[in-house]
Length: 535
Ligand code: FAD
Ligand code: SIN
Image (tube, rainbow, N blue to C red; front, side, top):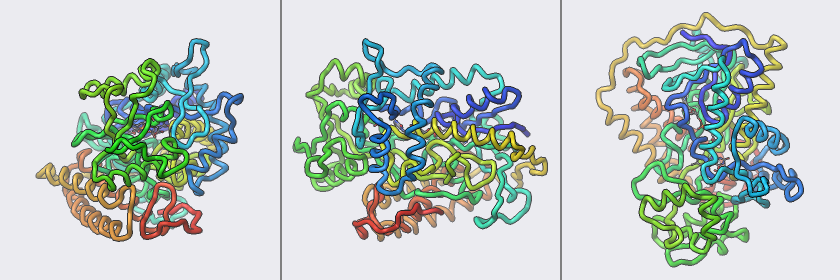
């Protein structure tokens, strides 16, 4: 058994930045980070385009960034949250610069700024085309400065501990559901341990692996949202899955390599198989329209021309500038035998970002007492029906700070109790090794297929109904396996992804309209439902 004052689940930008802030403030307290894979294996590490922030008020303004975010969010953003994130962004970005993150600068030392879909100005700070790798590197270096931060990698968190584990009936209507810690599988010993905490931060990232084609790494299996849902937390906006318009098309390769939108910001053009630049037929903002519009346009061109991909044309771009800003993309394409100055890059949309998640208040507090959520697993009200490009790294930093501030206020006013020692150990009685791994891998494939075929960029009622029936069956089969098996990460991830699939379909069925990332051909217009779907 482990006891820690602050428990952080996840070692991406959200978890690490929260840990640093808390470790600084409470040098006599312990901060424990649990992460299920290698410490740096996160969505954060793969971020390319950069972080959207207004730190040049001569050429940009907070009002413009706020407007861009609200327009992308298509009526569902919480304006107060949008204003807070945009206004607080520069201070938070300065902090990670102080902690060693290097963003590209010109010869005068001024930041170089990129532009992506839906942005009215060049405001995206970046480190070449590997911004996330640089941020993760700097944060992990900073974390090493604090002796009171303990990182345990290859620990798989299974469930959030609440009154349910003390034998009480907990339903969504229970008013004071409280988090006492988690059960986690130590993958080195294969033992499930009880970890008690005073405060828990869920920073477990995205869920792209619920789709067959995704830009998200293997770890993105929606564990945090699924366990929060099991613990009866409020979950919202799950129908809004963002498909990135331009993932490199390589048949059978998963995850898909991203071709950053910043390339279009620098002049790359989308073309169909006949070489036609088609975006003019879809939106006056052409290739830099918000992501939902570009992804739907590509989907429609692919269906119209009967192809599996369209192309991104970089041939007319300035070669030197390209090599400076996008060396990683150049190298990746070269590695698969393609010179981007000679040939167009085949691309297709891929599941990229989950706009919904664990519902929080303006301080990142979830509906479960003493459990906070931050980063991609949370739903703070910033993104609404469609996230503006490069706003997620910013949201994670701003909310990690807000969570840390709120927790400290509550601690100092005595509102966070000591550990709950009545929590029982994990009960593994009656379980055995799962007989056949194929049962797990095949169910995962089926789930990903169903989600991609029926709950993708364009949806309709029949497809959603079919998806739900298949998910129900997968759920039933997997629960049986779960009850009788010794736990493995693969089985737990499958179970979590089935929950994620269920939440996406359920949200999509409730939303009888087309808004932002949710497009249902049976309801092509917008309704007056200016509310998140809360499950
Ligand atoms: P992550 O960085 O994903 O970290 C999640 C952590 O939780 C991991 O350490 C994981 O191991 C751990 N975890 C999960 N489940 C468990 C469990 N059961 N037990 C223990 N640990 C667990 N956003 C931008 O703003 N700008 C960009 O340019 C950008 N580019 C992107 C490019 C790509 C290819 C991708 C995939 C995403 C991009 N995004 C971008 C989105 C952004 O990277 C993510 O939303 C953000 O990094 C999420 O950070 P996080 O800390 O919430 O989660
Ligand atoms: C990209 O670089 O295109 C991804 C940016 C994002 O997802 O915010």
